[in-house]
Amino acid sequence: MSTDRVELLQGTLDLLILRTLLTGPSHGYAIARAIEQNSDDVLQIEQGSLYPALHRLIKRGWITAQDGLSETRRLAKFYRLTPTGRKQLVVETGKWEKLAGAIARILRPAEEGKA
Image (tube, rainbow, N blue to C red):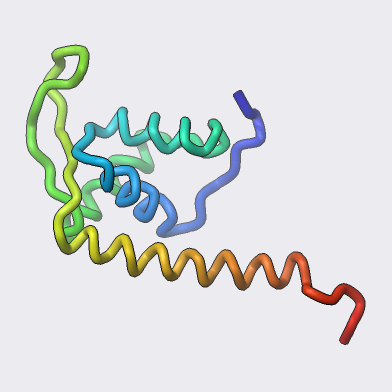
């Protein structure tokens, strides 16, 4: 487990939730664990961040919520990507890739030392 955790940029959690739900419906705890595991535990998602993000995504119509039973047979809210959310995932992924590319160009210029 890595102790080198990083803070998420605003809006990044929304993108990660949408991407996680692309594989199918999931409850909040499972979404957080999937993000943590897929990031090799670099990203830790706190409940205080996760649930407001889930509510924000529902309000935007990008995901829906439905009650169901978790793997441990407990009542849980399962979140599902909507068709609008799938389209938005493509948009948000494009924005993220553009931002990451721009930052990479600044951190690692193609020709160091040239003006």
